[in-house]
Image (tube, rainbow, N blue to C red; front, top):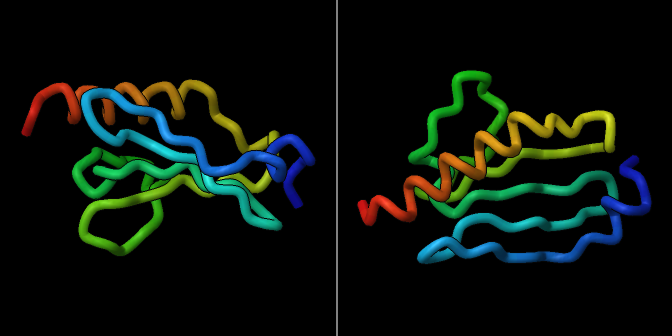
Length: 85
């Protein structure tokens, strides 16, 4: 069960030239999603999803937050958006 802080998050969008990522709160976890996630490198196979574009990182509690990984994923998403590809 996630902490109250994570559970209280609502969907928030961050933009870098276009839609970049979002948070979506569920009862048991929070998703950090990426609109172009299918195009992102994921050597650790942590991104979930089966759609054409979107992928998400499922966070079930504060102890699962890997700040460096999240920074890397966001930086990758920004680079994708800025590249214009």
